[in-house]
Length: 338
Length: 267
Ligand SMILES: Nc1ncnc2c1ncn2[C@@H]1O[C@H](COP(=O)(O)OP(=O)(O)OP(=O)(O)O)[C@@H](O)[C@H]1O
Ligand SMILES: [Mg+2]
Image (cartoon, rainbow over all chains, first blue to last red; front, side, top):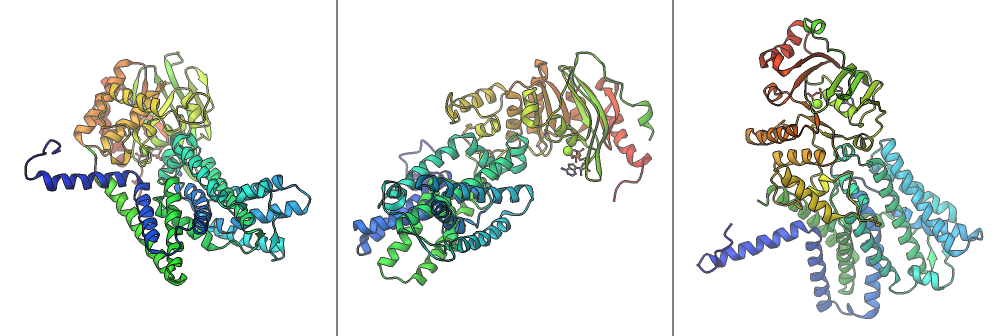
């Protein structure tokens, strides 16, 4: 277009428009970008207005909350990209530490017990995926049923009483017990899953499965395996988060799971640009989506705004994010870069 | 049924000229019999046109040859060897590639990821895909086939119908394809884009390395680019002629006569 117009009078506005358009394109093409910008703006806002925001103890709080939401969100993003959903993460979250405790109460040492806890959640994910794919039940229903089932198991196994985690040691410290260990897990997982999604066959097949199920099948993608695998990854990530949280708190709570855990994860993924329709989504977006939710919660709490108000703000934030997502999707398909 | 007797397909030639033979294929979907003893053959380097009414079973036949559906009966012979096609990758390994009616492209993936979907290249000794070499090859291949896209990084959803079709064809052809199956490659395409795709098919035909089956409802295009035409009616081949021996009028008449002479049209 008007690339070489530079000195005449029209140059001013057209250059501005062009720059805006370029920025628009950048944001549209990099779904994470808008989320990152919002997260940074929020951080700056609370840094300058909320008392005690930048204290080291608050930063630890923030890092732990981001991790709690973010790891679940990454798993959910994988499932959402497949055009499915997993509501049961709210309970698999609490299930993993309970199974770990159960194993330890039968004399299994800590590390194998952690592995058993995670394996149990992987089985939950497998059942979610299997029922959804082979019995053709919509994943909303499959995982809704699973949510209640696991909730019941959690309470039954523990008789409804919280259990203590084993005392602090190098393993529990690494698994959520020490200040930043949860955040380190989050960052490592985001980097790993980003690579998996963008740079491996599994990731490309995941995007293809959600983007065009029949098409992917016709191209030879084993979409059933892809879906089941991602359900397993999602459940395991939720379970891992539950274990990290248990070691952080020092106690295994049968009632730790909740729909809120799941809703915050879905919100973070969607705010980060993952589409509920499948085929589109990013891990970095899920990370910053979790960041936005955490900052809103933490910042407004510090500013003395009540939890009720926070819910209103959260609701509005999600609505804006979703509307933006739809708008950006339309913007992308309308404009042909030619 | 006036045609079915005299125009029953000639028995397939038992020569190694046949790159593909499909014999007595049966395929049912519940109570629907989509293919009812379909028999056809494809010679090396030949372009076969497959015509027939909507629902005649054309796409189903293609999907069986490409390993997507499994037949309920019958035999498939590829280059003289009996094969059991169990999956798309398995058919692909035999050199069978398909461009589906619904294109099978993923809008949210880039051109090059679409071109390599299901057969991604990997970096040696690593689980990571080799994006750079896939891009390079995709670019080279599209250039080679004179397909015009701005960049192989563009998401396929942003491209025109013709570009998408060309990418779907390029994706099928790029590998070691011996048998290329094109299901309505020119459907819903403007005249200019249709011509580009026809030119593309003709260029492939000139190379004579690829044998093709092309499904189309536009008989002029079939007459234009194919060597031979088969008509599929209710799951059976009922007509088989070289294009020199038939005409646009005859093909049109054949399909129309189904309603005039045969049972009532559905509905
Ligand atoms: N996956 C399926 N499940 C059930 N029935 C199917 C399936 N695929 C095809 N059929 C049925 O098989 C018959 C043949 O369908 P097919 O798609 O092969 O027809 P076609 O010749 O390609 O038609 P068109 O020209 O409209 O593309 C139809 O009656 C169709 O409804
Ligand atoms: Mg068809």
